[in-house]
Image 1 (cartoon, one colour):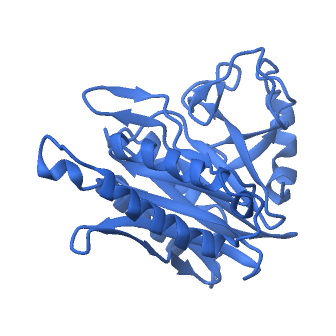
Image 2 (cartoon, one colour):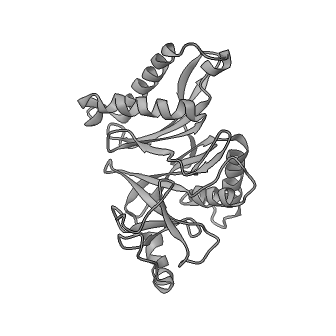
Image 3 (cartoon, one colour):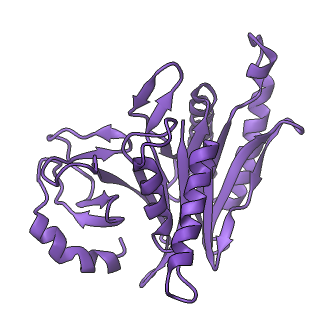
Length: 289
């Protein structure tokens, strides 16, 4: 199934939004190769899902098709906050076309989403959890939790989500700083839960995507698995193992153990130099892409 977390953090140059997901698909099998974080046809917005893929993939396809079909949506004339409302309406309209279900329960969407982007009108990041309410029989959007000025939202299976929320709280409480920053704490908690092996519903390589204040998104490759040496690790992008001939769009790869981005060059075949990684860690910590 799924674990997704999205949050905002302050850097020395501004603020940014991170979204992390696992890569496990299930349903009679385990398939640790499924993309779960998507762009939707415009540069300022991403969406991730949790739940039954017989619902989630068709609905995300509907969302992307909807945005790409209208110039005012794909060219960002419509602000991301208004786009969210229109998407909710479109999702609810789509439910009226569900028919001939083998069982009445199959007409109820067993899924949820995190919709996130940068609102030019509000001059701030916009994050919403989208979930189906059985009483009203409608999809609704709910605001994220807040920590200081920062936003944080989760979707996924109950147990790994609870474990991640609990771990975030523990890390913040353990800080010696009076008012600790959220910073990369959700990423640390996410990795601990994902790599613990305690939750069969989540697995595979993490997926990492960021949204920037300049209204652009970027997907990052991830070093995986974490329990081998740097030389043995490979790069996964959006849940898929990269081949040596596949050139990255940018030279930054996420290390989930360090919760940092590492300079890698553009080719997955170019291995990290452990010495260089150690020397550049302080710089990487402060670097904002």
